[in-house]
Length: 430
Image (cartoon, rainbow, N blue to C red; front, side):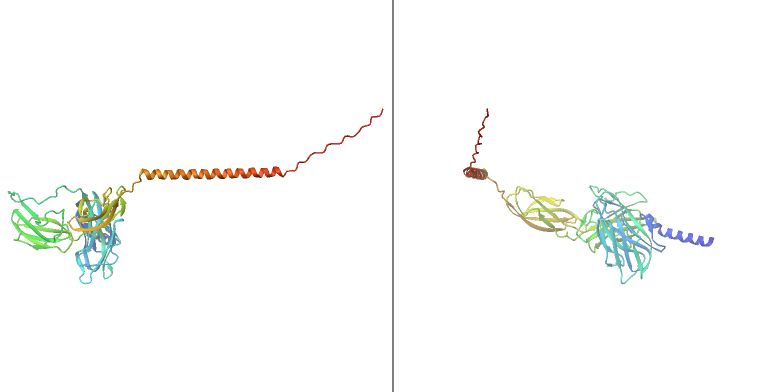
């Protein structure tokens, strides 16, 4: 009996040790007693307006061919932007969706060739921080990771992310100091073509350089992926720069790992944001298409951008620029009477543009003159007096008719004369 209890205790302890890494990443939730873990990785702190990736990884996978990642996120803090498979998973499964209003997602992917084994990336979800606060991205217990139909998930993870206010001036790589203390190293890691990590660029051709000063360097490794703190595998010594052509839109990270002669290691990471795709078609419409100038009227418009987001709108009337605004409307009241063509250009944070036009007409205000008002008043008075005359005539006619009837009654009446009573002669006896 003691031996059986001891075996159970060892099994439980082994399971908890396997899942410990998920706790350090923000939290874990046990599913079943299986070997593989699935957990999200990404930045622990971002700024308002920053777009960032959450990469879902697995450890301990064995010949995985299908995944279904179900989870939730803090929709008050984060806006979902995009998703795509990663690693050996290049096919998106039907039923993949995101509900921003409820803060839930379901992402499915499968592979028809290679299988996922050991440590592997499964999917990348992209979010945008919209306000200060603490949020999370996590998986739920109904997630699946299958190998020939057999479930492999043992535990699932959670990523906690803090959103802080963006600085007015983003941090830029500083020049190397002229003097570096003995036993230390100064590192400058930057992109001359994409110098600001908080800005979006439409150029996919990226140059990256690094400078190292101080203690002796043995090896330098470089890497590039969509993980904020990914691996560096390419040996780059003795070079101090490299060039990369990015595959498409998204948030990418360059990684530099430096191994020094004294056995110490330093890692540097650089974020690069790319958006080459213009915003979707602009929806544009005026409240009224034909309206007097004195009546209030607004031009309303809007567009969407999947990657960097809409930065501003430029509005022009008949070819003349009238405003640049982040709002989705423009007041077009009190304009001179004429026909107008309104043009709105939606501009994303990378400078990509999409335009649309609409037309409306402002007409002169119809003014009622005092003469017209007087004539209307006279006509009303005449009609009123005429009605009174008609009513009076009817009353008089009715009175005459009644009087004539009374005269006819008086003429046809027979007078009855009462008879006089005869008096009897009374003889008096004497």
